[in-house]
Amino acid sequence: MNILSKIRLFFFQAKHSALTGLNEKSIASDPFIQFGIWYREAHGMNIPFPEAMTLSTVSADWKPSARVVLLRGYDEKGFIFYTNYSSRKGREISQNKNASLNFFWRELNRQVRIEGELEKVPVELSDKYFSGRPRGSQIGAWASDQSSVIESRDFLVMKEKKFKNEFKEKDIPRPSHWGGYRLKPQKIEFWQARLNRLHDRILYTLKEDGNWEMQRLAP
Image 1: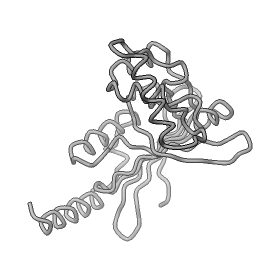
Image 2: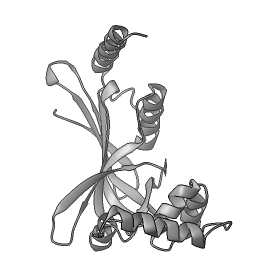
Image 3: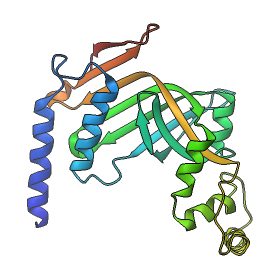
Image 4: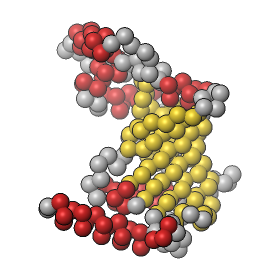
């Protein structure tokens, strides 16, 4: 497919997506089911890194920070990612468990915003995920004191070499400072672009009885 054909396909898909919209009568009553539908469609479009999501955290003195992490699993309990517990985000999470996630799939003109509280996943789950990572990534988890100031690139390479030698011909255990978090959602919003900026926004809010309330928001 040449570049012109790709451009035409992109605008056709974008226009079709914008015209389809969100309808309260057809959207799933369970936000996790609706997320699964959109997530599979994003994968089906071969969008680069459909699992990429912006994680926003807040420090103890209420200063926000954001970065992109990768979704590594989700179910009715929440959305899971893995990182260094001693990193800036890890420190902020220990001080303030409130956080948000944001997915943006440009090719589908869609966005999903999720708000909730973060908790560490069980160590067994972190161990299982870590054991399936590429060996180089496992070494990297040991070598990098994420978010700390280092003197040079050479210093990082030297630490990598140190742990390569230490774990040579051995299984690499998960470091205690590395593992997973689960964001337990309290609000999940689905945003679908529409013509003339009259976008569709459907918000799910978790009620005290465990059920989800669905509401339409003005764009």
